[in-house]
Structure formats: C-alpha cells, structure tokens
Image (tube, rainbow over the protein chains, first blue to last red):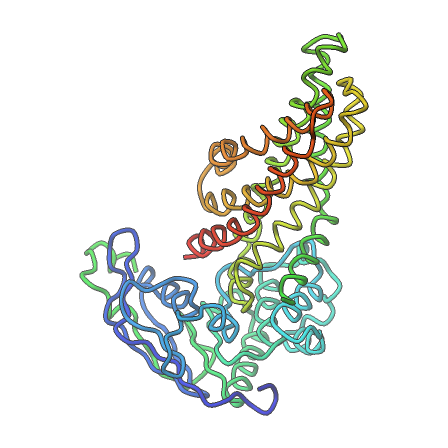
Length: 224
Length: 221
C-alpha cells in the first residue's frame, strides 16, 4: 500500500436493491470495479445516488443483493470494509472548533499509523496551506469542502466514494481534485463519484441510477 | 485499540475548548441542590435526612443534561460517518465517547458533590459513602445514557425523548446510590449497596457499548 500502489482487488455489487420509507428506490442494480477503475453515478434528484454511495460504504444495508470486495461479502466485516473506504458526503465531518490542520491530523491518527506526515501535502494540494492554523468555524463552505476532500489524501485507502465533489468548488480546486483523483487511480485506487455536472475525470464507466428505479411515481420525473 | 485513544483525546480536547456543556451541568447541579434548603426550610435534621437523595437526584439530572450532545454533534456534522468508516469497532468508538462524557460530566459532579453537601447538612459520616457511590454510579449513568442518546439521534425534540427513555433506567442506580449514603449516616453496612452499584457498573459496561453500537449503525442508515 501507499506510494507503491494498492494490491489487486475487485469491488462489485450484484442485484442491489434499496427500500426507503416503504418504496423501492432502486432494484437489481449491479456494478463492477477493478484497480484504477472509476464509476460515475448519474440520475435525477432522488434517484438514489447518495443512498447507493452510503450503501457502497457499508453505512446502510441493502434490502437485497450483495456487495463484495474480492468476492467476500463486505457486510461480513463492516469495520474492515470501512477501513478501506473514504467517503466524502454532503456533510463535511469537520469539527468547527479545531483548526484545518488539527482536523486532518485527527483523521490521520484515526485511520492510519498515527503520523500526520501527509497533512501538509494534503492541505497544499487543495490550496489550503495558508489556512492550516485557522479554526474550521471561520472557513467558507467551499473551503470546508476542499478540506473534506483533502482528508482523502492523509491516509491512503483503495476505495473513494465522493458525493457530488465538484459542488461549491472553484476552477482551480476542480483541477486540483481531478489531479488528486488521477493520482489515486494511477496507484490502483478505485473511485465512485455521484455527479450532476461534469465529472472530475474524463473516462470511467457511467451508471444511471434512475434506470434501476422501480415504478417511479409520475410527479418525480417532472421534478428532476 | 488506537482508535479508542484518538477519539477519547479528541473529545476531551473539544470539551476543553467548548467547556459550556460541562459548566452547564455543574451549574445546574449546584443551583438545583441549593434550591432545596430554600424550599424545604433550614431545619438541619430534615435536610440531613434527605441530603443523600437530593444530591443523587440532582447529580443524575445534571448528567442527563450533557448526554444528548454525546453523539448528536458528530451526527449533525457528518463526523459520525467518518468514525464509522475508521475501521475501529463501533463499540470501542462508543466506549471512548462514554469515557469522555464521564470525564467531563461525571468527574466534575463527584468533585462538586462534597462542596455542595454542607448546604444540605450532610452528616460527616455520609461523605465517604457519597463519594464512593458517585464514583461507582456515574459511569453507569453515562453508559446507560449513551444507549438512549444513540437511539434518539435524528429525532425531533430528542432531549425530551431522551429523558423519558433514560430516567426510568436510572432508578436502580438512584436507589442503591442513596442507600449507600443512608447507610453511612445511620452507621449501617455501606459495602452491600456499593457492591450492587459496582455490579450494575460491570453489567452496563459489558452490555451498553454493544447496544449503543447497534443504535448508532441504525442512525447512520
């Protein structure tokens, strides 16, 4: 692991279904990812992109179907699956009263070997070097989001799950994100991105979550 | 195991920076206790008679005050997701947060109790059992409370719901905690109620973290 690359792995889902509040969000959904692979989740609002990402992280449990890492069920050991997963969702998961650097150092200790060696580099990659010693409370929404993305880099993990990472990012940060993702994939990392606009990588498979929806109520497709 | 220490250290650091929660609990404990001499009247015999129970009830309510925040802040800002994906067993995450809650609420209560006891004319022989009972009982309160705090995550008016859920479960601790103080005052054996408190602590320690872990995973769904 680390700079020399991630070990050979596959991450796949088969027959995945999810029910929320009594209705089926999607059903019979399948995907397959290998080292360096990228998957872009598309679909209307409410089609279940975020639900699918949380499911891939092992945070929620599918109603049906299987999620497998190297062929073994990811839910057999949710802690181990969590350890190989980095998730950036709509909530930043940052503590307002801690500084930017402290927030990343906490993640480094929590996930890794206890060293904060990569914190400086991660902050620089997203242009946050100047803000390292500022409490997160005073950062703007965009800066917080960049900090949450920078957290991806502090301890290497093979599977990145990003929920609309391009939102609230300026052009420079979009490019920084694309670079960081390219590096991650070059080392053999996998990535799943839910996106509305441009995805932060040019290649990769596209999965339209809407097309797995079971009986969408008519008012929904209008709302999108 | 390292995740336990990292989360505990972070929670203590956060509690130190936002000392409001701890201070509110202690302030509540002090004010609620001092209200009794005003309400009941200054007769030292009556006050001494009820002192153990009053201190326990107010300490228990004070510990409940800060309980709601144990998981709620992490849940609201998305930190809970990051913790659940840390590879640390969820029951250890829970234990770290419970220890932090006890250190920032339980320990200050134990320190404040003998300072407040004179306002209730607690007899000298009651101090030792009171401190011992609080030291054994307050960790149990934090452990039981954590289950409730995890269950009410995401609920509206979670604080009220939390007290309805948790307070009935606090009754055994209250009974034996008060009994220990009572025994000290009346020169009876103090050991039996303390041993029961210790037993309840062990029981809560072995069961509550796992129940809380299940509730947390459910809340993250």
